[in-house]
Every structure is written in C-alpha cells, then in structure tokens.
Image (tube, rainbow, N blue to C red; front, side, top):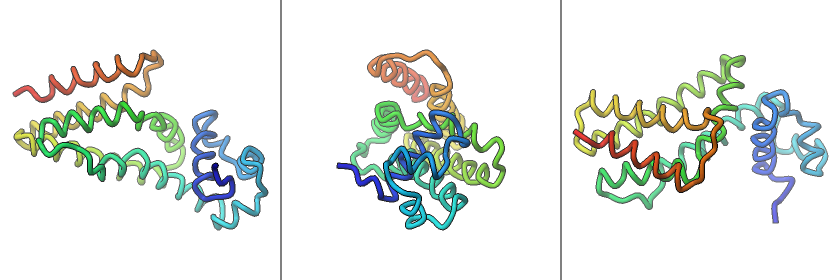
Length: 180
C-alpha cells in the first residue's frame, strides 16, 4: 500500500505530472487532488513550491543517477561492468524523465545548473568505467560521451521498441565502444 501522504508520494506524483504536461502541471492543488489528500500534507513536507521543486530535482537525480552509481551488484570485471551499467540504464528506463526535466530547465536557469552538475556526475562515472577498462583519458572521454548521449537520445526518439530490442541495441553500441 502506498502512503499517499508521504514525501515520496508527493515527489512521485510530481514526476508523473511533469511527464504528462510539463512543469506547469506540477501544482500543489492538482497533486493533492490526484493523491486524495489535502494541501496540508504538502506543507507538512515542504516549506513552499520552490523547496518542493528543488527536492523534486534531487529525487529525480537519486532515482536516475545515484541508483546506478551506487549499485553494488555490478560485476568487478571492468568490461562486464560497462555492459552491466548500460543494461541497467535501459532495463530500468532510467532516462525516461530526462526529456521532461530538460524541457523544464530551459526556462529555469537556476535549476539548469543543478542538472548540469548531474550531467557531470553521470559523465564522470561513465568515463571512469572506460578508464578502468583500459582506455586512455581521451578514449574514455569519447566513449563516455557517446554512451551518455546514446542513452539520453534514446529517450527523445518517439519510436518505441520492445525491451529486448532496446537491450540488443545498447549492447551492440557498447560492443563498438569497447573496441580498441
């Protein structure tokens, strides 16, 4: 059972609203109505909408970034680790909110800085994977950029494929990136 009054439920509902119609759909009144709670529940967790939006970005980053970086189940072999991370990103659809977040920050320069920091963290994580796999700094940079842009770009393409096909494509891309 979902606790409709929890902080997490508010943040989950906000991400869904953002995906449905952009940042203008992330309104306290409509979220409260969708959750079946009063606005008082919102103010129990958040000082105001600005704090809520800041926490929403942090929540998104935690779900889409930190869960990958901190995953203890990845293999220790460096090339197997690159493959596992790439598969994890696709399998858990971790980039699905990126188009909506990036649309939002086009008009919110302060929060755009937060997303730029998240992009940097993601890139450095991927670069470190390729460095560990034995590539030079420039080779690791290029491969990390390619993998990151591929994962993000997939979310902007409207053609939807089965999960197995998406995983096959990602693994083919990773195979190319792991070549000397």
